[in-house]
Length: 102
Image (cartoon, rainbow, N blue to C red):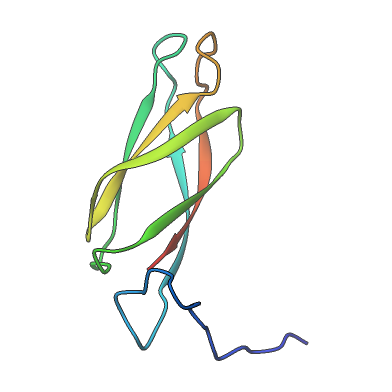
């Protein structure tokens, strides 16, 4: 049987969270399409049904040889930019796991 944990501590000097009474976690798998040519990036708009605090972080778990970064971040979503790790590669359609922490 698992153990419920009810306390989260933020170390001194670290950036605080927007909420002092909760941490928001979101898990999502996002599908993306095929790159047009070698080295081309693919963008995916990720949106939320409810707003998040304006300060949140996105962590990635790619399932392919890609890199990713976030742009256009708002409380209602962001743009996920996916690039091949090597400029000679073309992105194949796939999915990427996201962990969102606010």
